[in-house]
Image (tube, rainbow, N blue to C red; front, side):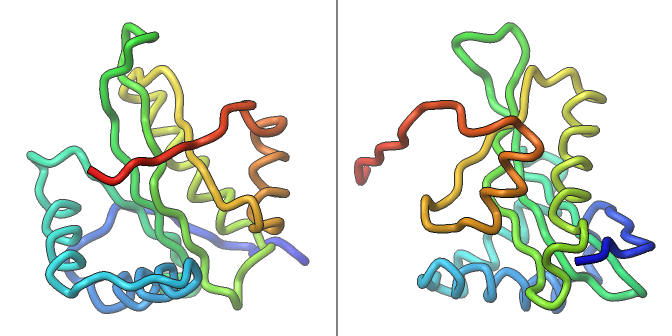
Length: 152
């Protein structure tokens, strides 16, 4: 697909709530899950609170929000500087394959460079080939680590 001519990526502002939430719900649906509205409200408040580490950017094309990314820095035992976990990335299906996902990831990478974070890392589902093609292109391939999870 052809890249979009004009993709801008910027921090979320309070007026973005409705468009952000539309994409957030679509992201959760993509992963076949849902969250209580109270958790969505909590995430939104964290994003807007400068005292919270969670940050968000939106991709805008022709005045409409077509992508979202959430990320946060944290200490790392193997690095002097913080590392950044890119937790959520979602692009509206109508604009996939046109450079929006890469623009969002590159915006997080620029933020990491500005702040001196050692690296940006993320994970995705094994059965998400479209996203994995982009991630492989940007990083050279997976890190080789397998993710495990225990309930708290």
